[in-house]
Length: 333
Image 1 (cartoon, rainbow, N blue to C red):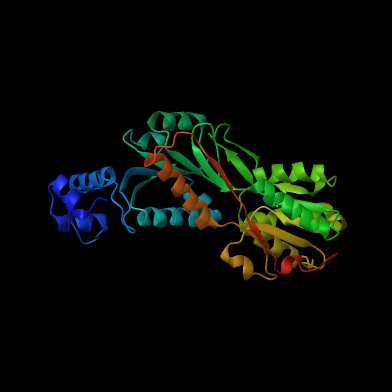
Image 2: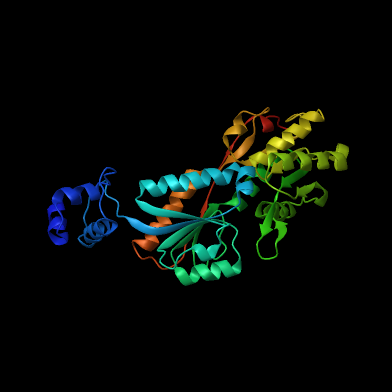
C-alpha cells in the first residue's frame, strides 16, 4: 500500500508538503503544478486514505437559467447552491458558465461538466466536441451521449392522481407552467402536464377544460391561473388539483382564499418540490418532496465515474419522491 513517503520520493517534494496537499490543507500555498503532480502520483500509486479525494480540475458548471428564472423558482437556486457545496467537499475545481456567457465561453480544455437548464441542439453539439463527461440535472436532452439525473415525474404524477382517485375524486385538474423551447423560442407543454394528460386518459378521467398550463412556475402565475380556472369553470371547478410546483400552489391558495373557496373542504391540492414555505402556508401544502441533495450528489457521483473511472456508457438516473401529506388534502371525499 502506497504511503506519504512513497509519494514524496516519487514527486521530489517533502512529506510535509505531500501530506498537506492530500489532506486539502486550506492554509497551504503551492503552485497548481505542484498540487497536480502530487495528486497524479497519489492516484497512480493507488494511495488510500479515508479523507483523501483526488483533485478533479477543469470542471464546468453550466447554469443555463437567467437571474429572473431563478428568482421565479427557488428549486433551481437550491440546486445551484448544493452543487457548489458538493463540488468543494469532493475536491472538484468548478467554474460556472451562465447562459448569458454563451456555450462558446466553455474552453476546450474542460474535463467534464454538470449542466442545469435548457440547451439548443447546436449547444449540445458543441459540448459533444469538448468532452463526453457531462451530466445534466433535471433534464436529459442528450441521453445517448451524456449522463442525466432527474426526478421521476411519471411516477410522481401517477401517484398524485391515484391518491385523488382513491379518495373518491372524479374531477381532477392541473395547473402548471410551460417549458421554454430554446430551439423554437416558443413555450411548449411541460413534462408534468404531458404526464398528467397521459395518465388521466389512461384512468378515463381526462378533461381538457380542467388543464391550465402557461407562464412561469411562480407564485404570481399560480394566482393568475387559479383565477382563470375559477372564472371559467365556476361550480365545475375540480374537487382536486395537481399543481406542478409549490410556488404555483402558493399563488393558487391565495386566489382560492380570496374567492372564499375552502381548501381542502371544497378543493384538495397536491404540488411538487416541498420547498420550505410549503409547511407554513395556510393550509399547509401536501407536496412531493424532491430530494435536491440526493439529485446533486448523484450527479457528482456520475461525473466522478466518468472522469476518474473512465466509464464510457451513458447513464440516465430517475430519483423517486415521497408524498408529504399535510392539510391541503385533509378531507377524504
